[in-house]
Length: 200
Ligand SMILES: N[C@@H](CCC(=O)N[C@@H](CS)C(=O)NCC(=O)O)C(=O)O
Image (tube, rainbow, N blue to C red; front, side):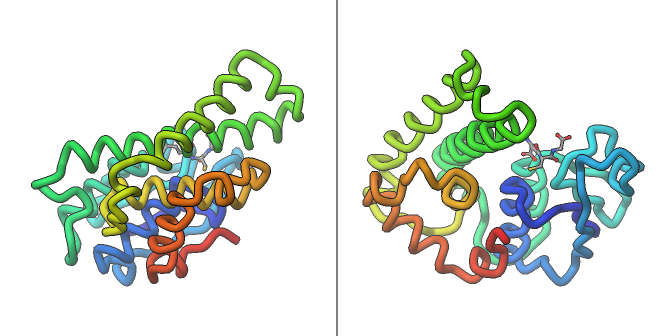
């Protein structure tokens, strides 16, 4: 299999963490690329030119981090990323994590192309408020309150989104403002699959 990725994509990091968790990392060739480049190798196989993109051994081209994670769950070893006895809870948390990631990523990419003023637009304000609401929700989420740091897809998606916030938008200062979430995140982020995939 080949995984197209870069080192700063939070979506690609979800897939990398899952590859470690499912003990599949040795079976994947990592193809580092720039998804924004017009003439990339990635564009030859993926019309939307987005990462992560996974090409499996049959040549099937999979995109969308959470869909790729579901596929890896059917292949690898180790604990299920989406345990059958907690499917709805896990998918709900995965959606919250990816939504937080989408909002944070869109703040970063909009500022990059439109400057800080984009924060004052209708969509800019919506994104910033969505991040705030997600943090408030997560601080009292049962998973965090109960200290559940088993690395299901939901836990992975939320923890990667929070790491991305620290990496790209430190002004949110969520670590100090959300102490329970911060302690929970520190436990998840101490695992090997997180330390080996840290943003650089
Ligand atoms: N919903 C997608 C988002 C993927 C995504 O937006 N990836 C970014 C990099 S972090 C990308 O490739 N952007 C290039 C582009 O949109 O042209 C997922 O979960 O995989």
